[in-house]
Image 1 (cartoon, rainbow, N blue to C red):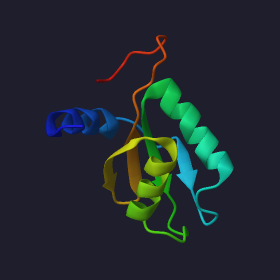
Image 2: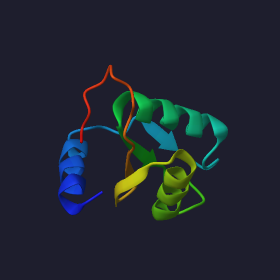
Image 3: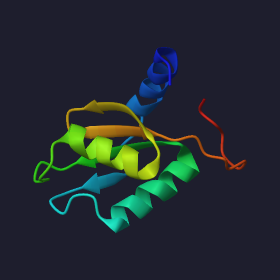
Length: 95
């Protein structure tokens, strides 16, 4: 992903609200399944990491991206934005 694509995705993500939360249990199978489904349906997902989470936001973002084959667009405060191209023809592709 180049700089202009990342900037475009960041601007789209600024208008979105987080749709998944990660808390003290960290990254569970349920969280992975939810985020995977959301990435397939939307390509861009914003996630909130609660303050009681054991790991820091950057670590959580990298773990999620590695597990799901996604790219970290940005981490800002306690928010993570992930992107993964979806092969689904039913959605509007962002890039």
